[in-house]
Image 1 (cartoon, one colour):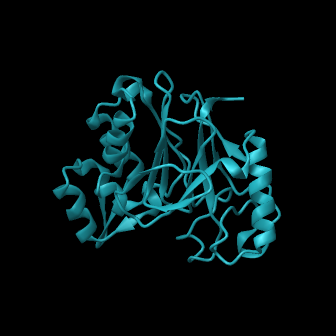
Image 2 (cartoon, one colour):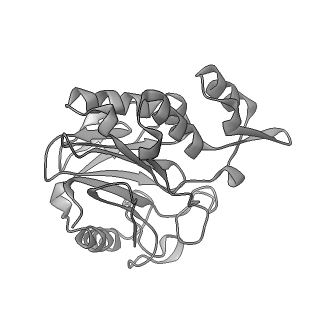
Image 3 (cartoon, helix red, strand yellow):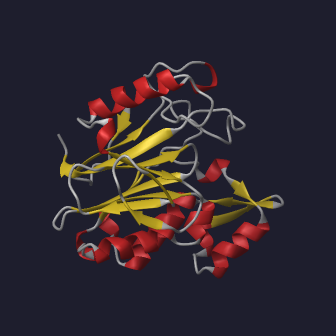
Length: 243
């Protein structure tokens, strides 16, 4: 049900589609109410998944994700607009919803600050993680204490983009080794791009973890693999030590 990053001390998890009561295109642990699934199944799935982390729905802070570089301070029970959440408060669970884009969870346990970001290609090229780190520093975090975990997302081998996307990444200063030509398109390594950005911003390399899991694998929901008819995973982090 949940994958865990070995470098994070905070209570957290990256969900898979294993378990849950949804059926059909959403079979398993679909956690989104916006894809056409039975709302009762979604609510049951959320309760089951969160209880496995010792969390409740009342603690959840969520986003209407818009593929931007907008970072907001979390408010439990409220769906805000943007693509990253930060908080220094306890008893708030930050949630990112994905089905190919990369979720990134961040913590500074020493100073009690956490963050969570939704990194599709648009947010990545707009350097949403740089904005997230800046907001975390504003709440008292220190770069040398920040640990980051990049969860499952669509892998290099299965993610091709056009030359205009390649140009945007290169113009934004990303290294060209995150891209590889593939006939008339380019394969893009979004996981590597965001790991590079974290390090470039000052997060120690040995404090950055990448899951290496691809969302097109059977245990995950994948928008691209399933032609848009699929469920969504949640990535969650709370400002408390792992149970």
